[in-house]
Image (cartoon, each protein chain N blue to C red):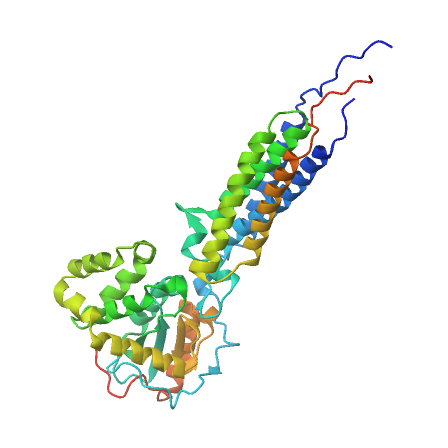
Length: 150
Length: 255
């Protein structure tokens, strides 16, 4: 019988958080492609971030890259629960996402001078995924640790 | 009791199915969100939004005159003055530029179309003021509108290029300008003075965003900055045959 170890719950939490981040990123991606032009303003705002030159990387919306990242994180966490050894890959993935998120928050603060709430939500979910992974490193049991009745 | 063999969770294809379902769901939802909120085709023919188009300027009568002579196209003494305040690093301004060009072509000398520099002092528009002085420098050699188009058409390229001034020099060269004079003028007090004068006028009129368009001193709602929207408002002003309530400048000069 497999034990219901805390790490399983961490993986479930990771799945939930990744899905939340995925939903947020899909919304931002849709906004990127559908937003009508807004006037440039002295007043700071979300639109300023979403229409800035930093909203794309090599012509690809950053939100779309984020959505892909969350989808991969979700998939790796899900596979972990089913016994696949993908948790280390999940760790690499969420570490990269956390670093990128930190850079994007810095860009908003230092270069654009405005914050986008939905981008901050995405940064928060990335950091939370990273935190879940860090916590998992200190949990003894593994997902696939076999148990016996001895 | 015999020792039970360790039970390892068997690998299942269930997660693959779940992942596939989620992927399909995400793609469908994303596609629905994008396609469902696309503006209808022929948006330029949308009815003019006039609800907010009659906001009076803050102080049209006493606002500073702006650069004199202004950069303008159309009729010197036209009864309808269309005055645009724009920032060359503003994506919305670049997006509106084809509309403004169409309006200029459509009405010709029946309107006086004035362009005012209004570089916004925000971090992401760090090159906007220099761009304004550059277009003024090009204007000193009679290529204001041509250079203006170059800046708007290539906004993304030069905005993200640290060697943007070299790019501007290339634009100037391609337009047949004297590049040495262009660079000297761009750094000179005369062009800065003109930009500052336009900005002072914008502040006097209460401009806080770009593009801002005034028709005979009345601020046009941003949603009306379509060809159809502007045409409707200009036609209404032409029908009035009124004199401009906020002249663009005391002694305009053509470009």
